[in-house]
Length: 165
Image (cartoon, rainbow, N blue to C red):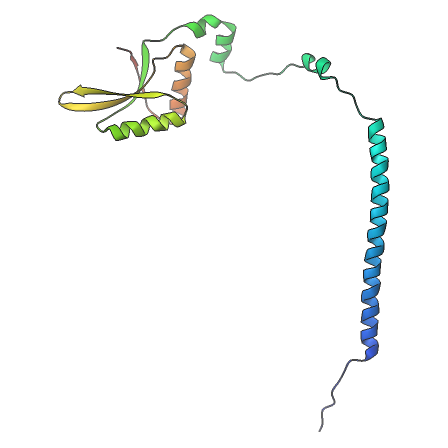
């Protein structure tokens, strides 16, 4: 038995090519319609938007506005009563750490610098050992002292407030 080889009819190929051509023509037709309608609408919108542009006069609007700035209770008191901020606290320092090695002290000093606090390392001989103390201050105002304390508390760094020698 010989097997009959089936081939597709040329009519099927002609039909598929016609359908594909029709689809491409339809897409191009829609594309031209979109382009024509898009430019016409945008020109009309530009013309209407130029006619209805609101005029804003910043010089008259901005002075009428009030902006609320959130402040802590202490900062609000310092603004309302400037004598609080001028109070000198030069006798207070914050000792943040005391180490046997200067490397550990410098590491803590660098960590405090990332927080925006300027620390100093002072060496002291106690007994026969040298201790390297990391200290903040002396502070020129109560506000700066409070800010330093709150930064230390937020970052879980223990401190001890001492009076300056």
